[in-house]
Length: 306
Image (cartoon, rainbow, N blue to C red; front, side, top):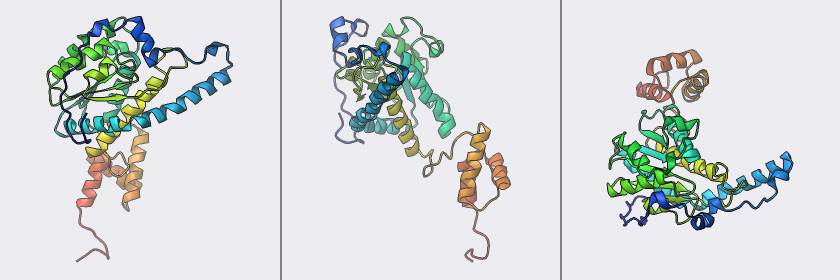
């Protein structure tokens, strides 16, 4: 583990794991994500009681993520270094974890204006698995690496494995191969001492405890992963210059709501009419481009310097 957020990690020898053989019942019983729910009679509760239980459990997720912030910071710094040098960010997962990665990746271009393909989400079973589970796709140890190869992944990129259990062969096998090829890696998992964390240069481990429905990691574990994904891409994109102050000045103007937001941003900063703001956005294509154009013009009016 690096001594500071900006220090690159020392490559350590990965632990010996066999991704296809990590399903022994004794090991599963030891994993927090597989432990039995504390709510034995959950199915007998009223809807109101179920909602209260879930809300109470969900409130603990933010605290668990808070305890992992130093790990999140180290991973975010690593992603920033790679992307600032021109590299790409890859998310790799299966099931809920894979879908969350795809959601985060797909939202980066419209939100921040980052080029398509700079943040890539991959899921076991391919795009079909986004909507419908593909049986046994996550159990292929070489599947994740094969999917990465299709994008010509290299040492200038960074690969983040997503698996609540930390044992998914599709993800563990891919990170193991990345390590062998000196490709920086991170992970987000919800179990301590997992095979996935052992393969990651920058592991993020958020232990949220057993789920309300035993083993249903789409619940607290999925929420924790979503929290961390939001933090990673938001902080990295801000550092890369895609945000000015607290405004998404590079957002894609892809609907009326975003056009209205862009016009408001400009009118809050400059003494221009709505029609003029709209005209400038039509010409320049983004709030940032309009701002730079306006700021490059010499000041005019009675108070302008002579």
